Image 1 (tube, rainbow, N blue to C red):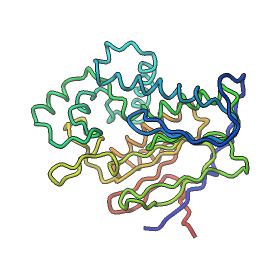
Image 2: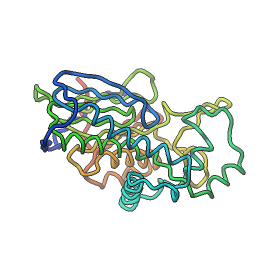
Image 3: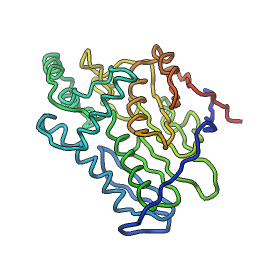
Length: 302
């Protein structure tokens, strides 16, 4: 497989809005992790910022998402979830409705992220498909949380730059002191510990979807965490992974990148022509044979 670098020459400069500072500020590099959004969220920052306030913004979204599997959506009175659901539905109207947010019962039944060891029965799957009471934010919660982080940083007097990683979704924020772009490696979904190339960008949201890291292996077969809402089983696609990059200045760019990486993954190579027609984001996809696709020019690493 030829490795590449994608240069973000088309991304515009990010303008920061600076306001009054509150809370505990630091002017040194810091790295801190916390288990949120069903993963470890790691924040690396250099400059002046309010660490506690930033984590509070992420914790609020994580706590809201955790409510979804414990009670029906109609019984949850949470403005964040209502806003997340509304924005998710808007994305479905624009890009495609294969992603269904009312499959919380099905997601909970399979329990892929919990390491399930047995297949649900056809009857259990059928019943879960019919149960539309539970909201499943899995394809948008991380991106939505990063949008909140971006808003928090923009509305404070944060300076410098930060990398906020929720594993499959990342926010690259601000400007590096040397003026250089951020350089992010894209993992190779077929070879653990390797990579397929680099993304070179200014500030951006980056989300990756696939089944190489979050899955359960049952009776020798791998079952991923992204579901076909027609069959109730983990979706079969010829993609191994899809990465979507959205410039950080894009309104709701985090939830957009999270949603699109999942949707493009679900549609497989058959849907590439459709997604190539849209503007405002870049995608890089790898199929199960190792072939790399993208809607921007990929420059080979020399």
